[in-house]
Amino acid sequence: MADRLTQLQDTVNQQAEHFCNAIGVIQQTSYPSKFINFDRTGSQTPNPNQSQEDYAQLFAQLIARCAKDIDTLIESLPNEDSSIELQNSSLKRLEFENQETALELEEVVQKGELLLEKIQSALENIAQAQLDMQITLKPNFQ
Image (tube, rainbow, N blue to C red; front, side):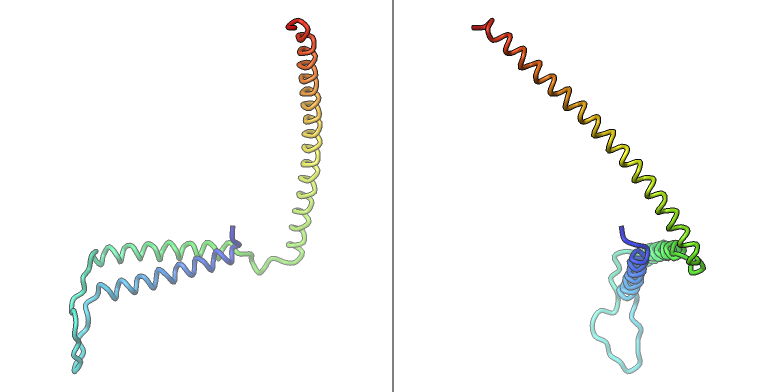
């Protein structure tokens, strides 16, 4: 997962795309203006496939949602007011939690290794018992 600044940059880029697309749709669906002493050739009416109200609603929703995401990401950034002492105490707390978790992990690994040894021993006993049974059954079949 990307860090918050990268997420913020991606969201701002997405917002810029929404604005560009909205302007493009406006250009496609709007009627041209007439200028004095300027002859324009070509089509004078746009060919809207979808009503402008639908596009306006769609882009309004996209832009509003993206703006809300940008606000949320900005609010989640670290505050300038956090002091070095606060950051250091937070780092010490995280380091302590990390050490505790490492000890718990070591205990779980040791228990797992003991269990593995017991399982391997049981498998050896089963294999030996099967071999012993084959040896005792062999003379009876011959």
